[in-house]
Length: 124
Ligand SMILES: [Zn+2]
Image (tube, rainbow, N blue to C red; front, side, top):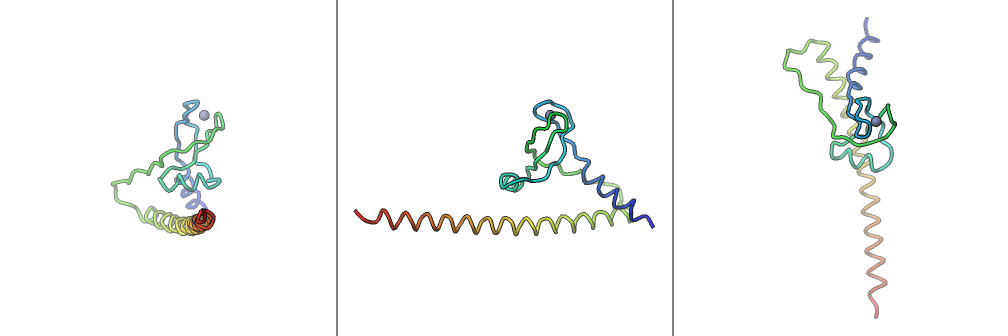
């Protein structure tokens, strides 16, 4: 039984991204949680928010995909890949819902604006 060890390994692999900070040029920047609409919008373009541990600024960076290893995957590695894939899919589904509802609100807003404008500028 090594379930604990396995989940720790997954977490380590998922959070081992490090990015150079644009301000202090250290590589102490790491993935940050998405906060607010802007972070969700930029993540549409594969940009993800990072936070620098050194100076504390937040910035968006093009997400770096982990290089696919060419060597034959072991059974535990394949298992990790499946776990990560299902986790990613769950996340994507949640993002879809968020984007979908945001789009609906946006379209409703546009509809409201155009309707309002058409009614008021019709006269004269
Ligand atoms: Zn910094």
